[in-house]
Amino acid sequence: MKNYAIILASGSGERTGLDMPKQFLKIAGKTVIEHTLQVFQNHPKIDGIIIVANKDYLKKAETLAKQSKCTKLLKVVQGGATRKESSYNGINSINDSECNVLIHDAVRPFVSSKIIDNCIEALKKYKAVDVAIPSSDTIVIADKSNLIKQIPERRFFRRGQTPQCFYLPLIKKAHELSLQDNESNNVTDDCSLVLKYGLSDVYIVEGDHFNRKITYPLDLAIADKLFQLKSLKLEDVDFRTIKDKVLVVFGHSRGIGKEICSLSKKYGAKVWGFSRKNGVDVSNYELVKNALEDVYKNERRIDYIVSTAGILNIDYLENRNIIDIKEEIAVNYLGVINVAKESLKYLKESKGSLLFYTSSSYTRGRAKYCTYSSSKAAIVNLVQALSEEWASFDIRVNVINPERTATQMRFQNFGKEPEDTLLSPKKVAKVSLDTLLGNFTGQVINVTREDLF
Ligand code: C5P
Image (cartoon, rainbow, N blue to C red; front, side, top):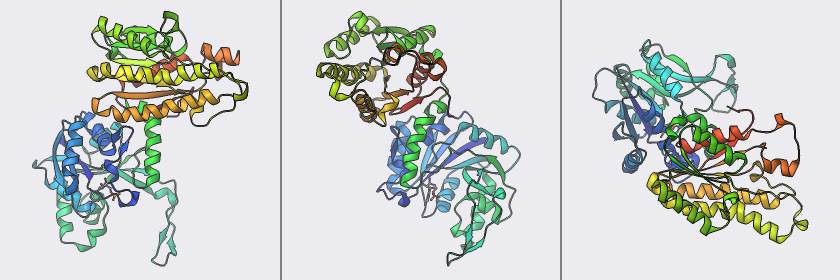
């Protein structure tokens, strides 16, 4: 039986207080709806996708789907005044008499392929399936005067998510019955209709806390952070895809850069390394330009460019000498700009990816680090901007944020520290490769000794 995803994107997004519906806002380099479409596009058991959009956004939705290579898109249909109407329009646009539909909020871009899998599996046994998680909040039932009528036992409560999934004839029937029923106008989801008319049991598939709905401005900020935290988990990266790809590493002679070179060589990449050791100082624009030209002359393409080159001089600003400061900024920040600027033409051609490094001090400056931490903050900002400038070229730009790492730079500045308090450069190299080969952009990838997720 075929499985179609209906992506509901016809909401007005009033609650965000922004002038554009939230599904069309950009997070992590792509609109929310593109992120959502990507999950269904990549799921092997989804046969087709229908987008339901407001009449003013029909064209935009179609363009975005095309832009994100959503080849499973079957049609974009016009939504209605309520979610229920939008969902009905989506359901009605399907001609197959026997199939399943997975009705999903466009504003839930974190839905996992595991949830989709579990829903499709559950549809073999049940005609209606919902996704929900236990409620961590106590639910109170209030009356019109804002007085609590009842506080039901929390353990029985779940919070509904989407997709809500159905055998098509069943959900069609539910909607048809609701057309003659004014009381159903306030219904905010499809499972309610099935229950209201007693058409079927509704089985619950376990959702997850990431599968959040973006509704309020705060949700946008949280979603941005979640993309940062989860971006690697969303990918299923196969390092073997780097075989025969051309990788250039600036800062290759030691530390993280060195580990990236060995790991990618192990998987068959053609690796070119540059550093001051072989005469390439990233703070010198001409040297960066020549290095990349040289690689291109030899390989006729460049797929991935990484710059780990950085220096750290610790002391209070008053004690620092201006020549050292200029050198630090020239390497740490101008170096990144030099590499970025010269990388563009090659990465445009290969639709490749660029990767830089920040430090955990980027979010908050630290005493004695002021020039280092501010140059690292600047890199994050630059990466975010470039990811937007270059999204239309299909170039991805990200930045790795490793916590204290066992590199020579660290030893030189801090002396010997217990091994188990430091991150290994090998782990940072692995995450770097994940990021180069993944498909997200504009992200700060935090690397810690222990994985948070
Ligand atoms: O309004 P609510 O938060 O329940 O919206 C959930 C999803 O339903 C959103 O993706 C929104 O775009 C969609 N929706 C719709 N048509 C409406 C209202 C909401 O497609 N009239």
